[in-house]
Amino acid sequence: MSRTAIVTGASRGIGRAIAVGLANRGYDLALNDIDRQKDDLNDAAEEVRGLGRKCVTILADVSDASDCKRAVAEAISGLGHIDVLVNNAGILKLSTIDEMTPELWDQTFAVNTRGVFQMTQAVVTHMKERRYGRIVNLASLAARTGGPGQSHYAASKSAVVGFTRVSSMEFGGFGITVNAVCPGIIMTEMGRNNLREPERVAYFEKITDLHRLGQPEDVVGPVAFFASDDSAFVTGQALNVDGGIFYS
Ligand SMILES: NC(=O)c1ccc[n+]([C@@H]2O[C@H](COP(=O)([O-])OP(=O)(O)OC[C@H]3O[C@@H](n4cnc5c(N)ncnc54)[C@H](O)[C@@H]3O)[C@@H](O)[C@H]2O)c1
Image (tube, rainbow, N blue to C red; front, side):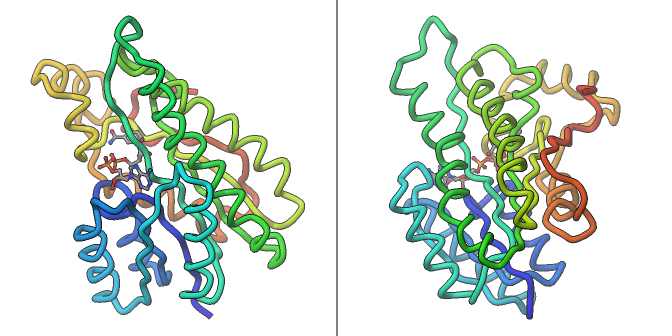
């Protein structure tokens, strides 16, 4: 029986790299994204199928609880069972605290934090019944040290780290591990929007031990480790994947 995984926000960027990376490691996949990413999501699914893996696509908004329940049900009916949930979907719209609207604050938390909770809640009964599960949450370097304009994002990702710890406590007795990765600056659409000025790019290249910014593929190995049985005795952790920016 093949291992299976759901990856949210999988049409592009880090999510897509994780999807391809898991497919290369033998996983069948359920790939999720929102409606407007439909074409890219189908493209990602074709890439996965081209690697010889089964792949279903699920259009759903992780900030909507009923969408999350439907997404998990469709993934189970398409793949038979779910071993791994990768909570990757996320948004970052820069705003200073002075200019922040309550709507932007709430939208950021609805996707980045409540989305993680809702997908976890939707899948965990199934994982408990099977007494097996791997949940990997995409937090961020911003959970350790956010930048100006990221107060809402940093708070939402810090909350993901806290949620990861308590999920680990609540689910550990059922053979389910829950871990987070905290990527640094990764050159995706989000990463590029976050780092528009060449001086800021140069600054981050300088302060990173590896003297380069990250690519989506740099995040795949750590996620695959947490998704696999190699990490069977590792849970409740948040691993920095930042080329050497932050130590803790
Ligand atoms: N790029 C970085 O520098 C960086 C750093 C740290 C953490 N992260 C985190 O990694 C994850 C992936 O980021 P990325 O850089 O690939 O960003 P991205 O913007 O390129 O991709 C994010 C994906 O999530 C999807 N998405 C957004 N809202 C959604 C929703 N409500 N429901 C379902 N899907 C939704 C988007 O459509 C998109 O496909 C995010 O959680 C992000 O916060 C990124």
